[in-house]
Image (tube, rainbow, N blue to C red; front, side, top):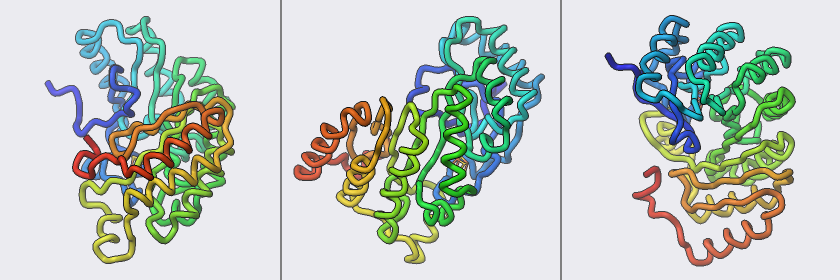
Length: 289
Ligand code: SF4
């Protein structure tokens, strides 16, 4: 019996985690740049199906320390059901130290703070929030479904509830027209959230997406690698964060960078400058690998 409904995605930092698929797809599934779950109908698995999945997983990986709940936004699951799932995980995997999932901003906004605190107490400890951009214009253009202000509220709420919060943004998402606004407003929103982790990814065109169609119609112009680096420089320059782990090591990125922000800001900016001067970027052919 096939235990996963593919394709299956997880953040790079969950490479060694047990993946428990508790939903299929994404309940939003409308972002114009996203191809990940286009062919999947959103579905929340029943507790019985999840118990079956856990039973199988226990046979394969009896003592995982990390578990990631797939697919695209497991936090959308009603709180009572999610609490039952977390209890089941704790019963079957007493070794687990970290349980995480993707959280769409609306999932965080739709739960009240007490529900989030309950989930945190039950063992869900790390949330991945796709911020994508801090610009209202870009968020609207890509159909993210929330404003920048709502994104900030969602992120701050997760932190207030006690979660570790990992945020991702997409370099190049504003295209040539909105790149400066995208960079400056993104830095503003990430600074206001002040997450524990911050990772810029770089726009990649995969699959048949509305964004791809917009490019073909000439409505959206992609940034060059130099322009993406300039955008990253502008974001980093405008970030004000407390001990935030900065990782720019996603396969989509032109270069790998890491550090702690804000304390390593000058070092990271110097690295970006040097890389731009030497044009030492990952070959376009190898991006995504
Ligand atoms: S919320 Fe995330 S998974 Fe869903 S469509 Fe948007 S980017 Fe894709």
